[in-house]
Image 1 (cartoon, one colour):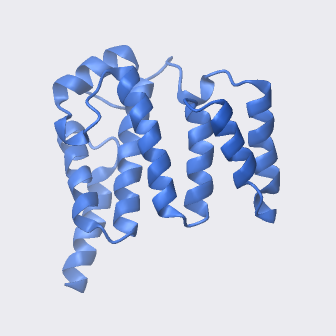
Image 2 (cartoon, one colour):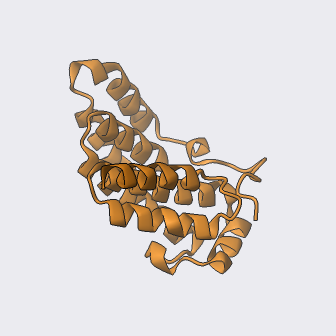
Length: 167
């Protein structure tokens, strides 16, 4: 299956947002440099807890603030939502090609988002020094994405090369 084939499908950021939530995200964007962006993002999340747009904004905030554990928590929330919406097992270890094929019939865009959230989680785990956990997720992504459309192979190669050089 080609995970790049998602033309004409809605993506997470196409979902309509309440005007208040949009305003909170805009306020967070404007106040990022002053260090006060977290409060409006958390308020937006409280108003729209299942909005992937809100979760992505919050994830990016934590990531760029180098608050990686909190970024992982947000990625986990996004994975919970997309797993539910796509009828995927929440435990990534149980994902199979059959699950991926069925999910693709529901929404290829949401499926890609789900798998990219897994890749993001793997990257964060690697950054936190949890190499085995991060590499395990990347290996699973490679198993599911035979064409390496998500770029997990390159990330895994970099990690394994670094570990050989350091080790």
